[in-house]
Image (cartoon, rainbow over all chains, first blue to last red; front, side):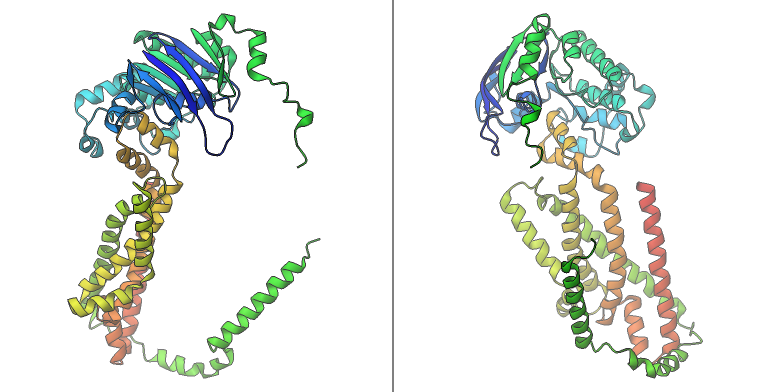
Length: 257
Length: 251
């Protein structure tokens, strides 16, 4: 369903590549969690998949179609099949829950209709349905900045659901939430994931969460894949490989610079 | 511990600047010994002459209309330009720099110069004044709004791209709701300024209560002048109150 070939990303301000020669293959129905320290390249990887980040070289195939050479128009069609959830929710402030969720359909609608905010009853019903799925019906007309973090992320999920996605992409969607809420959000994602048979790829900080929900774990380090297997085989040793490096001793940090 | 030689030098430089500025502007408090003249002069302002009140009120509405139309048309034209003149939403570097240059050029020309130039083509009256206010406000609001656009949170923009919305549409839809209260706030301030500007433009024949004030003054009708001034004060205060009311509603 999704195939990554020789993906490499260089940032201008760094000598080391953020991603180096990454090759991966994903099937429908997989729930993939990506682990790694900050700066290991996991966020860059997720953002490359829907083209928010342009790689330096390599290719990404979505249902066998290469997406990196695509024209804007076709890229938009791919993007709307990938529902993305962000760490900081990225909702549009000052708009209500319903209005924010409705923006999820902007990939399908004519520009003029979206601009004047003309939605027919069918579209609004669809939005109300996904809002019900994320249990926010009682908040539907509240402005999003009045919601709690967990509620905001559920709005984000509802917006992604309105895209009728074939895939969920998450860029640390629970890193700003407390553990209880984080579990709740992951339960919700998992439920939608299996109900619609999606492919889900999510970055996580929390190894426990990743092991609980994922069907496949991938760990990045210095832009390279160091682990790609079932969650059960990610144990003590793999944990240390992913999160610790021998050179990273506190005493050697240049503190008094 | 608080004392630094640098502070002393700063104070010294400020002192020199103050002295030079006073010399250049002939600033001299002792000149106030002739303040009786002023009292005498103001004495002639009262009692107010209310015989022209209906005409004055009519002219006031003309002034309000000039200020509103000029600043509002300025805002409407400035909005799309400000997206081109903002680094994060500009379609191309060339258009970015071009619109920046055009905006600062328009901004650097005072309304009165626009007014004087337009008068020669359009004749006396409020119409050239409206255009003068409009041009200047395109420059000012274009710059202010483009700075708001640049300071807006990029997250929602990214989300709009991710749902497959068109790029320019993503900018518009994710940025406008964020900056709207600040745009309104800038607009009302510019509206207030435009009222004062339209008074000045009245002096060069732009019409409105400004022109009436100028004419009354030049024909020594001081009792009418005092009423003109009172009306102008009321207008400015009312617009200020109205502006803060609307801002509170939106925010």
